[in-house]
Image (cartoon, rainbow, N blue to C red; front, side, top):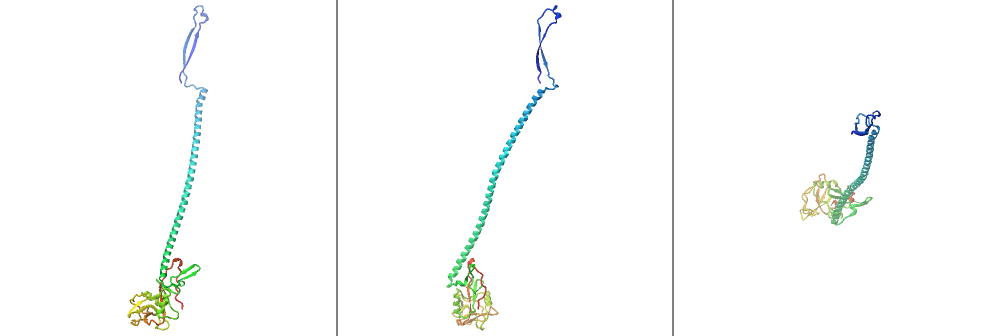
Length: 308
């Protein structure tokens, strides 16, 4: 600390015993300057300690107030952040829910689209089948609907072959076993009534199938009329007008008699044809193409042979 400077005035008076001998003089005034240096080893007074503590307490109070304000600000910021986060999380959850719903809706629409496309393809196929079937029917001179289609509990069901006919590959066959028997021409007319014709055999497999479905009856001269006859001497033609190539003859056919051909039941199907008079009465075999119906009209084909 700085040195303290004190001023004092000192007055000196003469003693009484010196009055007689010393002339009386005016009072002498002496000014003395006294400097007092404060010792650092001395303990400061109590008032000085209190004065020193006051600023510290004020600093603590200010720090406390500052920390309180800081905590309040932090709490306010945290609250604001929480509210902001809640609002945006709510929006995010809503957007996520909408996206999930839209995705589910899109998946459902895709599934519905696939179903509709399959249905469209099915209807297109049915339309094509119906047109194809209609073309075949229109080409026939006659068409017996009741022979193909029957009404059931599930609606109308149609078979690819007429009733009592047997399907083999792409053809339907009728093997007559009823009486009366018919001439070749009468048999052909019967077949035409079904939009068919006497059987045209153009492969070993077909001949084997026909031989399996026929049986011997009455005598060795009777068989089943097929659609082959002699035309213009020594030329054998089918009912379609196509000329015969090859054949499955028992013996070489007689020529020049304008005869027609029977298929006989035989142990050897590759040798079963004979020629005979077209006016002879026999059983017969009709053949017609399989009729393809639209899927919703199709029924299981009747595989039973013709009844007697």
